[in-house]
Length: 529
Image (cartoon, rainbow, N blue to C red; front, side, top):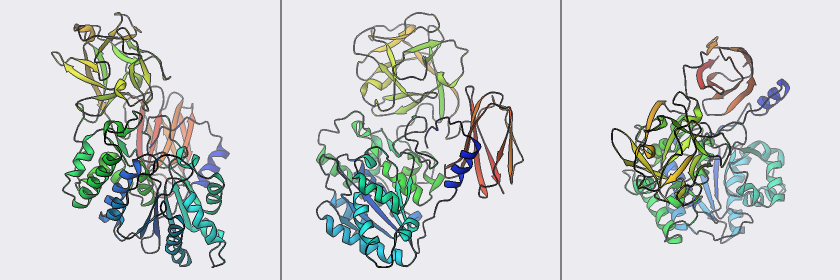
């Protein structure tokens, strides 16, 4: 699920948009097949994705699914191929092929799998965990083989699912990619690498979870899981990873830099099999498919304020920490203690060894010192800045206050003066007075939907059939309606206090209506009947 950019929609565009994305097919275990493609070049995230999909296939959710996996489904990217045949054998048995070592044999094997499916009216679901070159190499000859399978057949019954329009689409042979898009039913999901408030990765109506986490606890947890299948898969995945990166992953933009997990390609499986709220967060996925548990969030390194957002309050001034605005590289400042908007709210994102990122609720960004030296300002940076400079830990003081120490520089920080809008500066640990001490004041529960009493919203009627009225939004607001899978079906910006929405085209079921504005967010459930 990603942050949806505010869009001013004309009614005709809204109708066209809703119609185009109104329906999606569903996987039929009796007739369909999953073709799970992984490039495994040059980044190691596919190693984790294979272990994750293998864990899913062992669960009752995916029992009796017909599948066939493909290793080496890459395009024109360079870099080292991370051979993982032992893991593929463990995850998929004999149901996989090696397109890296023998592309032509792999194409023949895939063709033999998909041909009878298509001839019998089934669907071929391609999980594109890489580029579409391999898919094009079997798809186009199949269409041209004069065997009863035409482009009309494949346009209706080959469902290609992709989540990355950057590296995956960008490193594909563009002629082959165009052929695939023209001859399949092509779904571009939101990016499984991006979090809800990251401000990137939004590709349209098909929202997805974020299937990665920086904490180094999860791989160790998987290697000791009571789920014997997942335990073997993740142990082998970790062995392969360490074989290629014995000194750790060298790039701090990656979640592997902190020995985290990244199986973001598996958001495509989440969407294909319509798993929905059963695994719509990393924590739920880990609990359901890796740890074989069904309880609450199994995070082995929980936040000190679980499920909460908080203000960061200075001990000396009593003022709150915030970035100057939403822009990248702006300075961190302190503001009045009476400020309560989202820009003074924070969330803690744990990494390892007691360190964490501090993520702003409004901007979705972290902060860090500009440099190593004493007196450096603190600046706001995107979550792609995942190195030591954006990580902090608590050093306890007294009465609930603590210092926030930077992982890279080992310095604390403090406001320059007592005044509002005073900028933050980095100081050595010898600065141990009240100015360098902080506390986290909880401001409410954090969940996938943030509800607030500050917006006195009501909807009518509920349940609704053709029209839904929203009352009580006094200022310009962004309104979105999503189905329970997270897909946005209506999105509109309005300045009116009372709003009306035509929902006659929506299918029956439960929906979530969210109103967002500069004051607060609120989400209300309603039933379409």
